[in-house]
Image (tube, rainbow, N blue to C red):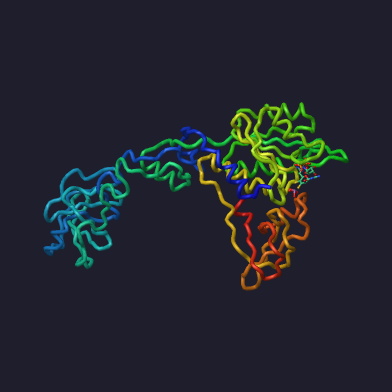
Length: 411
Ligand SMILES: Nc1nc2c(c(=O)[nH]1)N[C@H]1C(S)=C(S)[C@@H](COP(=O)(O)OP(=O)(O)OC[C@H]3O[C@@H](n4cnc5c(N)ncnc54)[C@H](O)[C@@H]3O)O[C@H]1N2
Ligand code: MOO
């Protein structure tokens, strides 16, 4: 049987990022750039003051001048308009262009206005602070110090968080080229299934997996199309598979195993799908199936809810990442000591549901839940982590280190 790693590699091998579309900045959060973002402008466009104070010439200070004639004002959005000459100062505010001639801003806390015009505007200013260390450039942001026209600010493949959006905006881009969001169709199968809240017969259970996958996939950036529940009848499954056309990924739930009513694979084959693999060395999740239908990847998940969930974490989410233009997430593991013994593992890589315990010193240990049945949603909801047991791993005692995956980092 195929290993988990090989299955992941096969699924990702022929998946490529979807094409580009243009979205306004306000909708760009979480998307992935399809092309580099190049600055359309220089920032700051000219030298700007970083402080409120007085713009003057450093050479005057070096020559011992302490009192300056005030010849105007520069504010953010409106420069002074003239030059600063010897013995002159311009009142300046944070974000204002530094007038030509001035090469230094003295902060206002180090000064005192010593004379006023009739209008009340300052006429003279004295430097009161110790300015021995004043240097040309003090409190001035040079033109282009942030970025210059033509600079690549953000590279293709970059995920767009708030700070990347800020840079793109500052570079003069009201909209951005991003990879299209994957359209993911979900199809549940099974005569026994009903929607949450629907009246249930004695043989029925609620389709808990579709809402679970919808949440997982939407959070990963997919546009989810829920195709509903197909009963275990070929014509109905055929019809719903046909309805998936146009999606970028079809995920089926259930009907993947070997029972007489497990019809999904036959329906896919009849629709022209090529099955790449079926069944992998994994627990839960053995009957996982992967193939392509007219170029669209198809993941056939086992119906047991825990199996469908774990398979989604390990295979569907990385595939959605790749289609979205993102680096496929890897289930990075860490090692923690066991809080209870675990038995030797058989040939399937086992993802055991487990709880993280914290002792008085804050040290963590990991406790496998008692019943690892893949139908148990309450145990899954209680779990904080999966213990990763490699094929044929020997039994392990409390205190021994095991690999774990934290669920809050995955889902
Ligand atoms: N003889 C064998 N029987 C089974 C094998 C096997 O190798 N030989 N594999 C077992 C394993 S492992 C799994 S996992 C399941 C997978 O079965 P299917 O994918 O065919 O799924 P179903 O039979 O349709 O359902 C299994 C189970 O899950 C419930 N289910 C299905 N869909 C949903 C849903 N959307 N929400 C909630 N629960 C769902 C369904 O009622 C069944 O109880 O097969 C084993 N059998
Ligand atoms: O693989 Mo099944 O998913 O063990 O329950």
